[in-house]
Length: 72
Image (tube, rainbow, N blue to C red; front, side, top):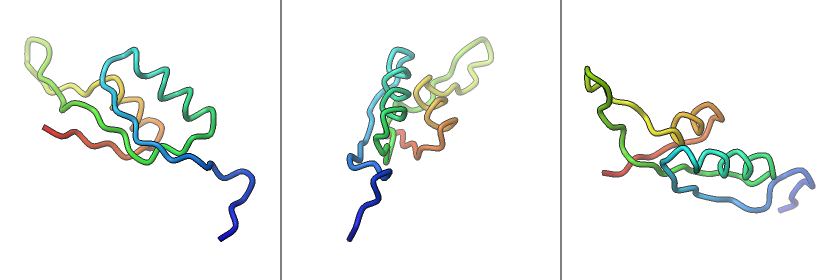
């Protein structure tokens, strides 16, 4: 199997939840790493209405088109 020069060679699973992990996700993407999966904590109830809210990492991963899993 021949790999194109533009194809990323390293595939990663990123585990993260807080806002400070978002720049890491972005830098890895910009560097050409292939993010196969993002693992983050389940959505948490927030605010007065206790509506479920995703983690910052989940929000950015979905914006970038990555698959996300949230194990209990």
